[in-house]
Image (tube, rainbow, N blue to C red; front, side, top):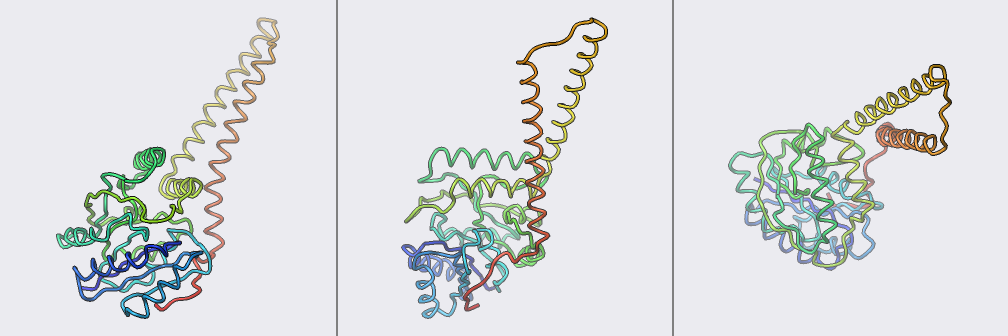
Length: 306
């Protein structure tokens, strides 16, 4: 049985030798037939040169280097598109996810599961705000989607090649791979672990990227925001209709004209705010439709030995 490990890399030159060593050991614990596929996502440091040096020394090491930074999910996609193993492990390249856990994932796989994901018990070295926003997002996503997307998990997981083949048939531009894997189905389980803090450098997941990632996840697997926009439209329309009836009643029945600058501004701002909100929600979905229609490649490979 051949095992393939996909590791997206972005400015991880300081820890790449350790990452390679630990991934190799983890692979050999499972099978002598393995491949390590590093996907360089437009790194600005010496990551690519280190990967190329390692690849020269070890024929089991493969690499793909993008022409620029295309994002974490597209880096994983490139790895999935090019692996050849019977089982595939996706793991981040910052060593927050311990490669030694791969053996436990594989043992669960041998029990007959097609997907074994790593579930975080704790997250070391992360701020309270990041932990809180991540917790809220995953639970919110679980509530508003019909797909059972596991909470407290990242992309660190082991998947069978049958799952990989299905992922290749889902060429979505705005990727949310953990959601796609959950949507595909098959038997799935998890192994719990404590996530380590970063070995070096700072996370590339800024708040802006995290927010975009959250929006991608929600818009890819839920139409609830569109329903909320619809419901709000009906609510505001009903509210406005009642105000019109009251105004006409006051004018022609009570013979009294409604006056008041405050009430006028409040109602106008309320209705205007709801309109902008609903237009924004619709715009997010239209933007993603526009991305899909363009049919641009998800990534561009500049250099590879695959």
